[in-house]
Length: 335
Image 1 (spheres, one colour):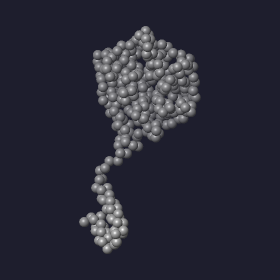
Image 2: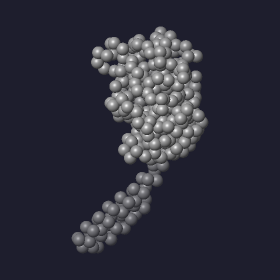
Image 3: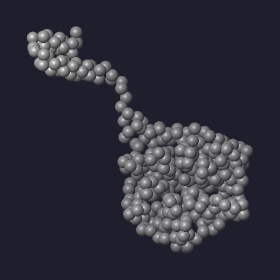
């Protein structure tokens, strides 16, 4: 006989000697005590129940496509990658192509010889009006209208006091933010795609070279390169800058690699060595575990993209072939 049953018998026997109102009160007490003892008994019998808070992050790579037919790439060459409307754009000064993920098709596009690695390096970014490349020159691949059937490429305003290489470049709204650089590592400027003008912003509090950045919740997060563990947050509403320290040395040592991406309200920082770190900007905390995907170590020109279809992609040149992987990110139910 368990404790709950024993107590119930005692109470019921006692109730038989009492009047009706007391009997009712005792009945409620009996039910309450039985529930209490049964709950204690149940909790002791479920030691393997999983706490949702203990759920781990997970990051795995699933191949989408690897092709040897289009284009014919060389492993020892450099390539730029960009992403817009679920389509990968890639090339250099010799060719420019796009790969439509949904249709699984490649299309040749008009080449621009300024899309090269001579002088200032840069990356292709997606912003209002098309794709932009800010390197030795500043060019735009314009989207929409009949103009794409003529010459989609056009140079944009690029003053000498703004021009620099290996900058962290982020598109947010109608603006493009460019921070740091090889020659002026503390500089910070913004380009308005509507007015087509540049403006200077407060200087970066430390040297930001070959860095990268991402927009999240009206803020721009910049992460330094060249083995630095520094970062900076620019508030686009309050126009303030604050620095922060990241718990690892960021190895963003090549300016054409898109290393930072915002996905599922997390910021993912990767390097071309196949290492990834996850940051939760809402809590201001990094996930302690470092993820390593060894197959990405030898990629040329690797990029991370958060697509409009809700997927996270990794693309680059693998053994002279265009390769696209989807990264599957599992998040904890609560933190």
